[in-house]
Image (cartoon, rainbow, N blue to C red; front, side, top):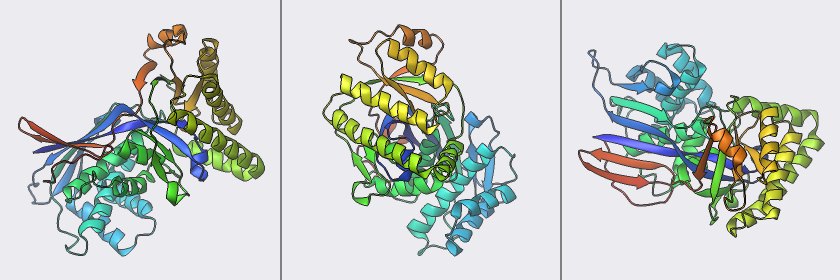
Length: 391
């Protein structure tokens, strides 16, 4: 039997960076997905169970994670839950003996941390640490360009955590909060200060309003009406972690300016929520909110000359646009009213494979069982029922 799990990418519609500091943000899932295929593996000649991991998008050869490595992480976290990310990275670097590619190290660390956190949470009290390590073949592929602000890291963390939850007999479709919580812990291996919004939208799908420091309104699914979105890839790579740390440094240098910008971004987000929920996407007021959010992000120092040029050129055709995600590269988004907007400029970019037109509100994490010709699915984001069998 083979299991396939997929999670959508995301775009931040409003509230980038402010969400890190406890203000609200609006995020939407997009149907560009990360897919994890897992099947039962085989014992090595030495009789040691392992995870055989293939990550072709990193241009890396397959890596074997031994049972010793897996159990070392589990044991270390049982003894000390402080700074689990640092513990796992140290073990990966020491024991796995893989290349120095940090992306590969981080990805393997996510797999080991997800395995350990799920094991500890689901069966630590009833089962010895060195049990329940079964050989697995794990392969992850992505339709999302890395470093583009579309949530490739969060989607990767989400499918990995959903995989281990399912294998341990849990049902992420019953309550996505467990999946979101564990995936958020693993995403800290990828980014220094993740807010949690990315893993939340990858798990749930749809359109959400997320506020990290407000438990009563941490993650609300919006009844927002979706519309077509223009997604423009600048092809300028950047590290989300680095950009977030740059903003934190700017905050330390000028707390008053930073606080003012964050409050203004939050105000725009609140107004945009009302427009989205009432289907008022294609009006002058909504266009002004998109432009205002972009202006504030420029003042925050996270735009880029290429982003500014794309925004300016789209404005000439009556289309309001803004960066999405961390900024300083990545992608630009624009809401389309195809009856109102001339898309000559966008069509020109399409010829360069820089632009895609996508619908919002893709479904969240999907778990699909491949049993010969039959296929049953559990869609986490839309809370549908599915089989509870696992390996």
